[in-house]
Structures are given as C-alpha cells and as structure tokens.
Amino acid sequence: MNSRERLTTAMHCGTPDRVPVAPFGTAQHGLDSPLGQRLLHETDLIYEVGAGGNYARGAQPPVRREEHGSKTHVIFDTPRGPLTQVIRRTDITSATVKFPCASGADLEAMLEMPFEPAGFDLGAYQEAEAKVGDEGLTLLPIGTGLCWLAEMLSPEDFCVMWMEAPEVMERMVAVMTGRAKEWLERVCAAGGVNWRLVGGEYASVQLGPAAYQRLVVSYDSQLCEIIHRYGGLAHFHNHGPMTRYYDLILALGIDSIDPLEAVPWGDCDLAEAKSRLGGHVCMLGNLDDMEILGKKSREEVLAMGRARLEAAGPDSFILGGTSSGTYTEYAVENFIALRELSEQVYGIS
Image (cartoon, rainbow, N blue to C red):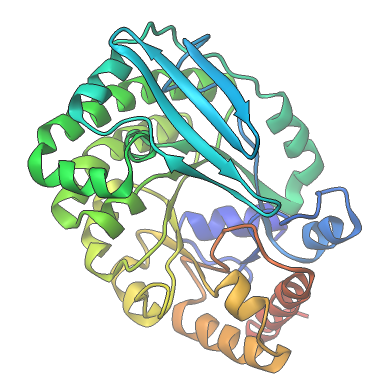
C-alpha cells in the first residue's frame, strides 16, 4: 500500500498493511524543505490546506482591521454599533485578549450584519494534492458553528451563557451551521474531498456532555452527511479528556478522530477506546508532539509507540501526535523511527 491507501483504509476502519504513522503537517518546515520531504517520503503524512473564504462572515463583510503596535483591532461594524476583537502578537505567537461579544445581544448584532455567501479557492489545495500525491493525505479544514461561537465569546462568557441562555447559543450554532453547509456543499461539488472538522473541544472541555449533544452532535453530523454524500472522509479534531464522550463520538457519524490524548493532557486509554470505537471510528494520535516526541529519548518513544501499536492496532488506528503541527526537528526523527517500528511490528520488510 502507498501512504494514501494506508491512511484511507485505516480511516474507513479497515486493516492496512501496517498501522500508519502520521505527522500532522510539516511544523515550521515547508513541504518542499529537506525535512518536509523526509516527512512526505518516510512517514504517512497528513497535510492540511484551506479553501479560502470565510463562510461565517461571508463575502465582503463590514469588518475593519487596525494595527496598534503589537495589537490588531478587528472591528465588526454591526447595525447596533461596532464590536471589537483585540489580538495581541509576540515574536512567538498571537492570541485574542479581548473578544468581540459578551452577550446574546452582541451575538444577535453579528447576525444582523449584511451577509453574502463566501467564495472559495481550491488552488492551494489542488497544488498540495499534486505535491503530496499518494505519499500522504490532504485534508481541508472547516471550523464548525460552535467554533465560530467560541471565537466570539471569552471562555468565561461562553460558559456562563450556556448556564443562563443555552437557547441563544443553540440558535447561533444553528445559523452558522446553515452557512457552513451551504459553503461546504459548493466546495465539495467543486472537488474538495476530504475534511477536518474543528470545534468540538469547546463543548467537551468547557461545557459537558449535554452541550456536546445539543451543540456538536446535532449540527456537526449534518456536515458529515454532506462530506459523505460526495464520497469524502470526515475527520474530527477534539482535544482534551474524551472517555465519557465515546457514545457521542459514535453518534457524530465521523470517520476518524484526533488526537485522543493520554494522561495528563487527556484521559484516553487506547485499549478502552479501541473496545468502544474500533470498527466504527478510526483513532488518530496518543503521543504528544512536544512532551513525548519532542523531548523523550528514542528508546522511550519507541517503547511508548510499541505499546500504542499493540493496544490499538492493526485496524482503525493511526499512530500520531496531537495534530498541533508544532513539533521539532527531533520529533521529525522520532516520527520516522515510529514508522520503521510499525513496519517491524507488522512484519513488513
């Protein structure tokens, strides 16, 4: 099997010739760099490329950006007045330090902004598909309706609103899911095949199972239906403890999920997860990119990798990291060593 066949077989819960070992992206190294090429040729690389456009804001929204030193102000000119998001940058990263919305009224104002469906551009995706070819799998990302909502509210306001006005949150997710479906349908029809859905962790980590059912399963399953209707794969991203969500994961209708983190970052025991999800949802991950692959000795990494392969293989499993895409050059070498280990475990010369 080539890497693309190996990954898609695993994601369809089949048994590939060996368990795929899949870095997520090439970290800070470009695909055309020497390390990027090693990852492409020596592992089962998963590569993510966007389709452009913003289905939530739409085409030409009344949004302005102002630069103030290390801060960027994103100003939403709503019919009820401006709402401002503040993003602070450092030499290493960036983060929102002020969220645009703090109430249901602010969210409603966002929905009252003029809206025209967003466009898209598959040029970068098609270019990546050509470069990756059969040596990996290219995915298109889409933030879910809940992802949009969580980016509008601070974590505190997000949690309080679920306690005080869950119906407002559900209405927002419903509206944004409707926009996402319309956009996704058009991109799929144009050839955007395989997808990675992002946003579920905002419910699982911050709100709990009831919210996960109402805000994630009820709406994200509609996105999965569209993807499957066009013959694509629906891959789901969800950090944090996931053991009590296994039944809800099954209800989503997804093909695969990452990163199913072990303690202390999550609570996933792979043998238990395999008994619950195996044959229904492919599991990707369980080795932390930075704290394990990027720091532990080669011997420790290989011992942990072997334990994961034996607990979760040979079907419905892809050995990987946290899918953060932030791993180091040292971790690149460990990914390659794990691919070699996978070949040894399953007797492939």
